[in-house]
Image (tube, rainbow, N blue to C red; front, side):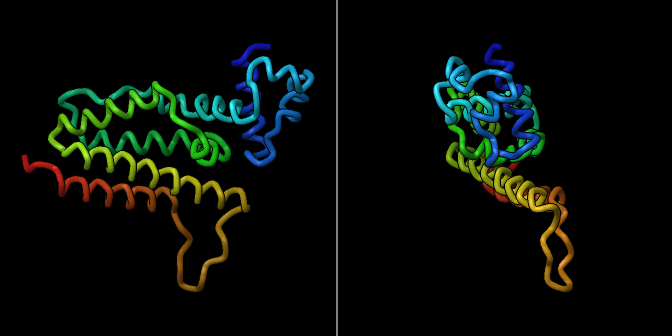
Length: 188
């Protein structure tokens, strides 16, 4: 049993039972080992959850970084869509990610993204706040969507209010963030 096997099984357990039900006891049982064996790879549940969050975010964390000359608007939209897809790929993915701390590699990638936006002419503070706002908006959108799924579907809505189309609502909110950022961009 190696760390990668433990992580893969932990993520499968997450998908099956949800974040609240993930325990080192259940994971050990699933792996056919005694619970203390897990501490060889992870000193506690918090460390395990952090590693799970990092592994779950790998599709987004390994996506190509923006390149000079690339259209910053298209990149901004694609980046946040990738983040959303990655969070949605795992049951309770947004909750798992929201409870984790970024690693050095994550912070370097964010700095590269902010530098890219600044290189496209956006003020540094606006680029930082746009990344933060869009990231938090994305996490919040996915939290709501996944909470609804966990409850078995859309809650009862007052008469006359249509059900929420989460993807359309996400796209509309993301467009508002982008539109606000465009107002701060230099005219070209």
